[in-house]
Length: 132
Image (tube, rainbow, N blue to C red; front, side, top):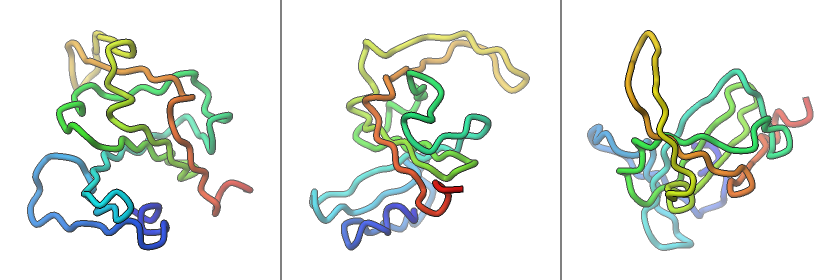
C-alpha cells in the first residue's frame, strides 16, 4: 500500500467494509478516473530487486485469480520489498497457460498457471533497500 500512496495524489485506497474475497486492495485511480484492483502476494526464497536480478525468464501467476477480471497482480519480494506487477489482461492469455499436477502436504490435484515472460512485467525496486 505504501507504493500506491507514494504516487502523489493518484491513488486513494478504498476501504472494504466487509471481506468480499475478491482482490486484496481496491484503490481509486484519479488519472484513469476509475477504481482499480490489486491482488498482492509476498514471495520468499528468490530475492529480486529488478528484472535483471529476477532469476527466472518467466513469472508464474495463479490461474484461479483470473476470476477477478480487470486488476493488477502484484508480487512483493519478501527479502527486498521490490515489486513485480502485471495486469490481468497481459497475464491471462492462452499462450501463457499451463496445467500442472500439484502434490503437497496441503493439496493435491491440477492447478492452472500462467507463465508470463518477465519482459511483460513491471519491476519497482524499493529505494530503501536497493543499495544494501
